[in-house]
Image (cartoon, rainbow, N blue to C red; front, side):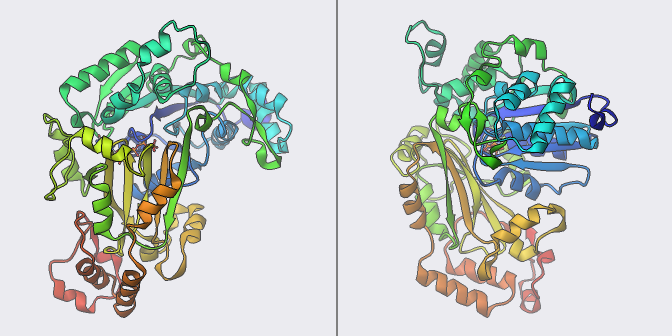
Length: 524
Ligand SMILES: Nc1nc2c(ncn2[C@@H]2O[C@H](COP(=O)(O)OP(=O)(O)OP(=O)(O)O)[C@@H](O)[C@H]2O)c(=O)[nH]1
């Protein structure tokens, strides 16, 4: 055993692997686990499919990271293919550090849990080592050490594989083809293109615990249908039903449910090692490397980041999205809980809080409008947005299928300054700071199939403020130095039907002399 590891490692560190399709509720579950009293020193690895580390930023923003926790972000790829080696390296580093009792890995919504699990085998390290011409010295050393130890399994071990299922979008995603026949039927047609259905099925089949999330947003009849499909695919996994991924943490952490022996006898185990091809990945600092076919190619999924340094006009933005998505606005925890208790009985998706005069649409109409718009093919989108009427708090945009959630997040860093707790991330925040409006910007990643980037850019650009409006806005900002005053004036200038994100002080007059002081701003 390499002496470097010997002294530090007694027991392998258990790991919970969070999987589940795009937007199903993995980050919500992670936040729930981290904010529950678990009594463990947890390290978290968050994997985002795009260049933007939205999930890591959300976890960091929503929850004050405690000192004993560590958050590692792996971006722009997937830990089951292109970032497999990077995951392995991070896990070895965490084991070597000897500071953590538990690790939670949140994979991307398009990752295949079986391929992540294969990273723990000696065969995987051997394959990387043998077939990798461009490894750096430290990468090679890591792999040799792991092989000597008998695989990553002796440093860290999978404890629980959790798959989160999005109850709202599951049926439409899984029934895009007659999946059971397609998958198990005898067509004799040989190799088939893998579909989203295949991916969902893989995620369900490989799970020890399956969480059917967003349960109160669907009808009882559909709940039963989803349960039956899941049961037929994986009769042994523990099945839980939740809203906002609220589970008893004991159900997903330290359960010891993952059965390594069983996994190694599953159909397809280690198959990906034989299908590896030269691509960019671990060891790619000097060129290309060996990885299995990424889902982006396998399922035709691509992503695109919309960016702008001009704010959205709130009314224009709302009018554009309102007939394509069921818009949910989350403004506070009390409201969220009330929402959860309400059970859906209507034909419409019931979580819409659209209180405008426009008639509510049926789910079919929303889907059809979305399909016939620039948003066709968008499976998931998430990011930050800047509304012209709001200068203090950043908006969070998050869509999964037909649902689009909007809420106020933390204040822009231009307001608070770069906080100390973000450590290395401070550099990234500094990079986002530009010109007089600092980090205020729109930055939304769209993930989907055959996305029309030009159409999306065009439609989103058309919702931005015009040059004239932007000038007017900047004049207000320059004239009024007080942030709260600026916010109030902007709210009157730009018609804004979104929920309030800031509770202003009752005594409005007292604002007159207030210096910029974010301590007086309560986010709703
Ligand atoms: N209506 C409703 N929305 C939910 C529920 N749980 C999560 N959401 C919302 O669904 C969206 C996606 O949730 P996330 O936790 O970010 O999903 P994810 O699986 O981490 O997403 P990716 O990492 O992009 O795959 C967010 O807008 C959540 O607020 C729920 O129970 N009901």
